[in-house]
Length: 462
Image (cartoon, rainbow, N blue to C red; front, side, top):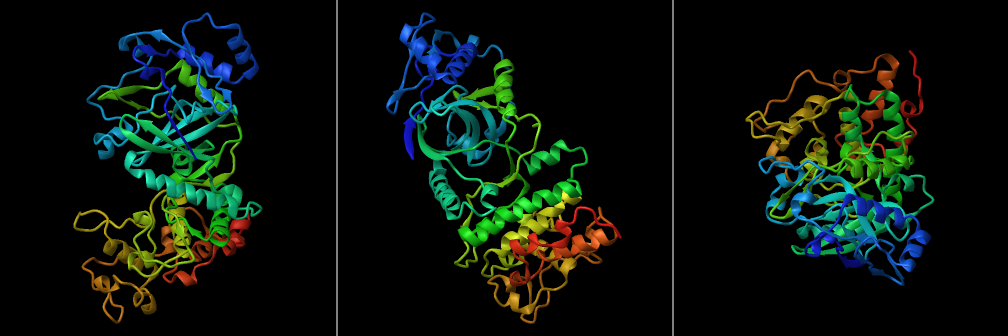
């Protein structure tokens, strides 16, 4: 774990940077010998700033110029003040919890230089950066000021994941962290995770596909990787993910050309941005389509918990909540299996299997969700209800439905599946049926699902 403040030409009074100077710095950082030779000869291009990093000097060389903000903003689109941009929509931004990051900033004792913005969320922003010491690309997940402990806990989880059993085939399908450091900004301290950059998530891939759903082959290949990841998490790491969704299933990058193209495009067409009370907000940039697709990698372990100690707190994305979570019974690894079974509908059928929209119009409610599950699977077993702290809100002592929400009629998994037919459909329904059961102990494990005939048969004929 390292600690370091930001080295940014913006922070030095009238000292600013130009795209040309950053490009020059990056080129030199990629060629250590050339940079050293230039440094030894002395630079005649302007005032330079060299920073010490560890035992040797950082080979990043800033060419400084004096320029008013108007000239600095030339060359990229400035988003109007009336238009909310990305994380600006969240209350955490309005209260100053986000870390102000500029493209070109250098963090962690002059080790990582920010190259462009990859994404944002309610607790962090994510940036592509270059490791100036090891000359490769990394992703920086910069947490909001009040989520420092979240970052530290996630980093500890990544350490557990990385060390549990690297020889397990699922190890390569679970994301890990390279490092963690602290950024000191005028707004406070921000924790930052350093990870390998990844290509699009399943959610992004769905958006790229005009049909808005996966093919059968793509689903099977992805599920094989995802279930390997879960088998590793459950059996070797003793962890429950609890937050499996299309956003958190990523693709590893094997086509390094998309990283270089990202940087070149940022230089040639800088990302649109705006400044809110002097804090920068950038529009995220997407990677191009790669020549080859990398393996599936399960990511985002901020909500992961130990699975060898049962618990009953609320968990999981609303539409993927398992029955035991909804009635607040003790839960463990099987909640992830239910989660995957429900999520398959999103990526393969093009819609949620469950919605949980209350008929009163108040949005998602547990009672509406449970009613949908009953309509699909039939009434829950009494022994499950007897374990749930909240069961009495929805069921009588003998298991009858008492919540004031009608149970949808005429539904079934067979009717909900609209893509396949014949024997292929029957085998698929048997596969997902092993995940979508009321009792958690009746669900198949990730390892058992990996051996399922439907998942391992690429062409199924009647």
